[in-house]
Image (cartoon, rainbow, N blue to C red):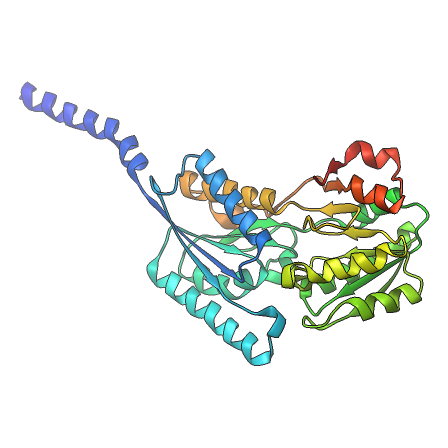
Length: 338
């Protein structure tokens, strides 16, 4: 009798001791979904993987990742192509729902907005990254996503951003913005227009098609008195190897007009860059994924994360080229773009 009790106790002890091993041996499966392959998305994805590894989830060891990138030529996107992309997103979401991964990462607004419902309905936790405006992706607010999902956002307080612009360029009164029909570009333009007057800035803008050259719009805004150009978060600027950026800066530089980037795309030409770091945003999404996968957290209870302090970069070579001296208050808090 005593021998049987002893054997039973030993068996229970072995189970308890081996439980952590079972947890450690688990391989987690993550699906990632995005529309278009652009450098900022890659930065978010790379940082996501790096932060997961730092948290103990290593691809090829205890983590499997399947990545789907939906090709989309935004430059030549007509209505029918947009419909086809929407159908592709929903088709991939249905496939993912059937395959039941442990978690889904969506990169960017389109993938998040149009895939989330089917994935969440399947009971799969969803974490998003590189989303500029959470409410545009279907979140209930800027800080809360809703049932079944969470993520990190590039959203920045535009009033705070414009205060930095005003500090950097106290003499500038009129800012020009060229944007496309990209919803992020329009949102940036509208926020600058809304908050600009409170810091003494007037905004003039022009909308272009994604296939258009930027020169005519820039020239028109210069003729109307633009003293600086703000470059919004707009896919238009990332096309054709930043061709629009180069055209804008070349035309503006000839008139000693500075470029100000509202996104951390480090293309040559802007003097001041103010915005959120795609890499940091990707890492923030990883912290939430770790809480969900390792700690069993309910994604709907996790707040949307964002970069707490705006990142400020200054291109000193461009500053010297234009003969523009930024105030010491800016130079002391900014990092070099190089």
